[in-house]
Length: 226
Image (cartoon, rainbow, N blue to C red; front, side, top):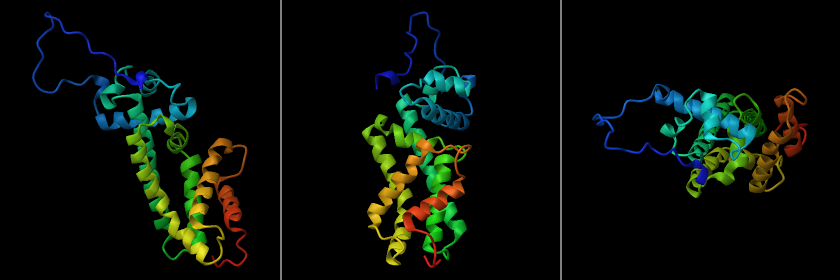
């Protein structure tokens, strides 16, 4: 990625002052590493989603965070590495939020209630507050390296694994007629596409969207047994 090279270091000359031993002192805008790194990831996610990866420069991201233009390279070797961090952050957060949502609904919930929880949580990840991360993953994955894709695939598999037993239980009860693996793929395809057309102020609420998705995938819950 030729656009992702860090700025060249200043040339050394005989007149250069001697270097002090130990770790170099950090510039003011690179202190508090953890928070600054998270700020970069969060603002990069927003800009990558709004403008696209190719049209967003590290200078744009630095300006959004209030950093000097070269400071992001203190935290990330390249813009591509920052893109990978955005996607990993999004998937790790999604996995944690999904686990919490399932824990809240409880193991005694019916498979349909569990699927409702999964779908509603997925819509919130895609369309709710701080929802820039996963859409970036969906539409900018072509810019990742092969190693980054493998890491992301592992996280995605962990996220989707929670859906399989729920769909299998619905299939066993006759509520889901399609093959479980194909149903999972089709569901995620339909849900993820909502980032292209959904507008909170012009359309349905996320609860209404969830109900419509369940009716589409399973049909109306007339018996209440699933």
